Amino acid sequence: MLDNIKIVLIQTFHPGNIGATARAMKNMGLSNLVLVNPVDFPSDEATSRASKAIDVLENATIVSSLEEAIADCSLVVATSARDRTIGLPHLTAREAGLKLTEESQKAKVAVVFGRERMGLHNDDIQQCHMQVNIDSHPDYPVLNISQALQIICYEIYQADLADKGKNYADEEEEFPLQKELEGFYGHLESILTSVNFLDPKRPGQAMQNFRALFRRARPTKKEMNLLRGALKAIESDKNKR
Image 1 (cartoon, rainbow, N blue to C red):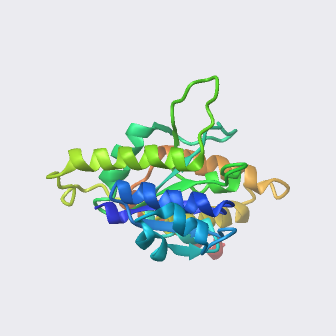
Image 2 (cartoon, one colour):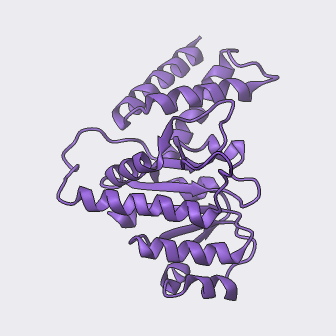
């Protein structure tokens, strides 16, 4: 199910990194590349660096936002070496490969890589479910984006090889897509605003904490439907008063 695994690059500045990404992906059997607002693409340099993975570049999807790139994904893993104030559950590279491979059996999943100079913004992180950290020596822990990507793609490929023959289709646990989660967050914010729970001066802070709570909980589709039903009941009761 490697076709269900998206590699997402956000605002890549250097076209050579896009080409190197395509090559790293093809080395490990991956082909689903999504570029969010690339600075310079298409590019001869990207094509040159891709070597025999030009088909990955030619089939790459270009979108204008991370939200659009991951809307149809049930699991989104951010790559970042930095911890955030409101963080994500952490995975090692090996754990990420296993998790992504397993969940790709049922739905699309994504690994998100940030900008070369500053990585992922906090707004990007808030749209992801988990974060992967690649262990490296403390003297120089910063990896080039193509190096980090090669490691993650390798772990995905190894997990896929080990996973052959397993079938998750009959398992009950299915997770909502990212666009469904965003719909829930919007609904929750609307209800909490209507009952004066959110501080109108700082509504975002509380919602970031709610997002963190639900990321840790990872509600299934069934549980998400239950939560949406509860919000609708609150909304209906309020409108009757």
